Length: 148
Image (cartoon, rainbow, N blue to C red; front, side):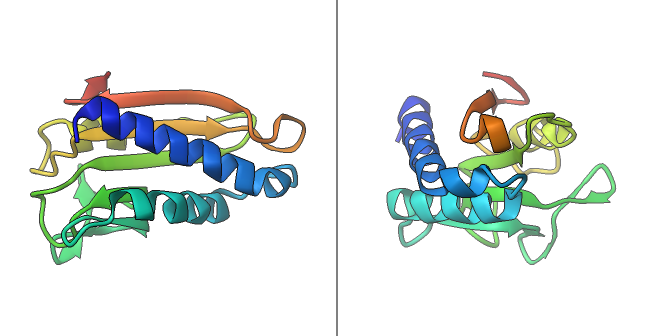
């Protein structure tokens, strides 16, 4: 799969997850629940004998995922567990109307050449809640440590 195909498939799954959780998004910030719904939409698209989709993932090989001396966790990782050979997409999301954007540095480093992670793509997106439920407030793709 090339980058554009991956992006199209992830964005399609994102739209499906929004439609599934629209009522829930109307109640407020539900990041973990929304991430689980998105994982469920991504899994049948990407899962192979090597690739899986994990939510709230904090492992790097058999250790804790670290960047710049800090333990980190990805909201969603499309990857092969326990190695860096098939790190496809690192996803950070926020369900809020007032995003902090405090996890973007992870996507820059994970898609760049830091600590060997080498994720092919990174995605940061913000989904609105309450009166803005389901509205995509921001969607930024990263590749090679920069905005794609």
